[in-house]
Image (cartoon, rainbow, N blue to C red):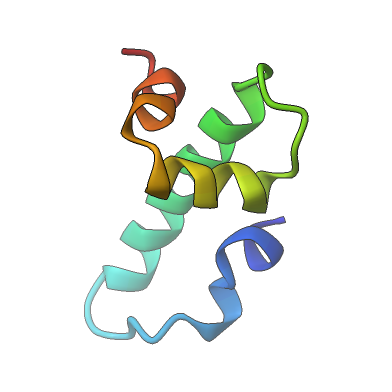
Length: 63
């Protein structure tokens, strides 16, 4: 799921703990997007919408 929604295989972070830290952040973001049920769209579409619409982003983050 992370590879589809976040293109994780193409990540370029390789120094220190960057890859692990980004994987953790992506996992948290994926869980928040899965919990948001007002939009009947896919995870990738929800992620894009959150990038465009600040109100929707705040809704996902729990205000």
